[in-house]
Image (cartoon, rainbow, N blue to C red; front, side):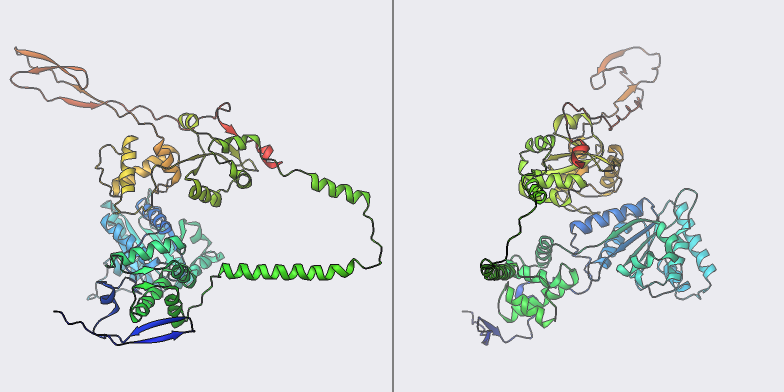
Length: 588
């Protein structure tokens, strides 16, 4: 018989509403053991091993890695404190090292002038601690240039990543610009990525650094997590550390947590670490709103999210009071003996005109376009978005509510025009023309970074293969250099912006891409030696007549046929079949 271990507990009454059973903690057991974790799921230091990739971070990493690999030169990444910039830089370095790219990472950007250059050379391995260092700027620059030229002769790429770059003074930033000038006639010798807080962007906007800013090719900004992303983040962190569903978080607790953290990774980790401690003391595996509230008070974090139900009640009460006040004020006014002025005929006619004037009419062509997708209820917001050519918010709403994804294309092909209802629209100034349509996506790309494995990558590889772009590579569901290269190749082929990231327009065009014809090999035979006993057979694969020798066969020579020219994707719209909106109707 196993003897149960008794735990001393006591009850605390909170605000007369909730009773919480505290247990005297066993200092030999941590809350990690209590919840079954084998490591802390919410560390306060960057956790590159258990790295969560949100949609925003995924796209940022893809573009930065692409920019480095393609030798774009100068790149900048900014974001507020605690949004994962350092973790992103570590993950990028891991990807680059797998690609055999030489990296130099400078963590503490408090260096200035020659100190910064010396630190860059040290991380490249050019300076040994046991050897004396020449401190002149010219010598350090020559040392770096010699190294970069040597790597370039080996066809190797190099990158310098400077974290906390907002601490660099303007003189050091000018030095960084000088380093970016190191190049050959055809390409950059080194790529530079500056990572910092928003103050970095402010420095780069200064007049003194306008030359540096003009060299920036990729400029990205990290944003906080949305509520849904934060929920996925918490589930991911708990699961990878061994929760197995033991820890649960209520919906109210989730909203409270988001109110405190505002989607900031660092604040989420600090709060959740404290919440687990509080839950451990409560002898509970459920994170409730009250537990999150207590954790926020302990950490002196202000909550800025409003309680919309309470706000609605208060607003309703205020409106009722105003109405009552209005009645009280107007009732005596009816007893007033002062004459009422009769409005002039002009005012009356103008008022009648305003009352009888119809609501802005939706163009028939737009109505027919939306009806073809059974989306007529979105006519008014769609028309408003169409005038600005900005469907960002509306497209997310329609996708969530109906499953239809809005696609905006700058080019239109004949097969797509015949398959979908297409709306042709032009900007008010006539500078931009787009083709708009809806479809239900067959592939949803949730993550896209080097080494990622998932079903979406498997479907992407298969789609590229069906389109004739991924014919000779393994379909393994892993994002590697071959898949990245084929994504870029398809973007160039389709006339899309070459970002290296498969966005919704990429997926749509890929799903509707006709299979490219691969060149068939033509087999010819070297002239046979004049011997007898030849047997004539037919090669059924290529329908090429081949003479085979019974004793010794000559080696065939494989010659690839010239590839067929790629068709032009830009094709005119057929106004008979495509639904079009006249911009004159829009501007009216």
